Length: 136
Image 1 (tube, rainbow, N blue to C red):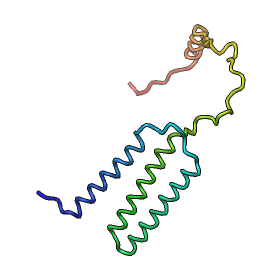
Image 2: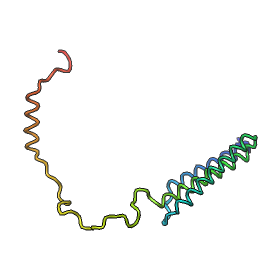
Image 3: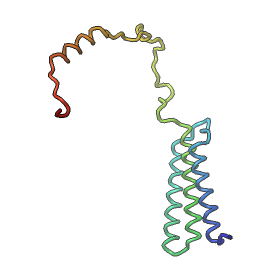
Image 4: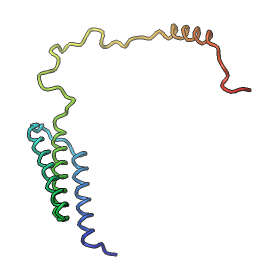
């Protein structure tokens, strides 16, 4: 059983794009963060490629549209991978706390008075009437 060439290149392209997306999500993040302006340029380039691909689709150039879309997806995957170097949850350098000593009671876990809780629970449950769930 042979695969027609038009379907074969589409399958290869789909697998290559899936690999690029998977690699951008799972590959080790770059060590140094990329400036945000460079990331914005990459995203704008990907959007421009999508626009060119849409124009190629509208003018019935399917092969060109597919290749340009693939380039846009690859550029987006690259931008996603590069953006992983700068974690948005990390505070900017120099904005951390100035006092490095923790508060004196930060190591203690607050204790809970289980006996008082039991007494309060039993008092509450004894004053509350119970309705049966189902009629006998």
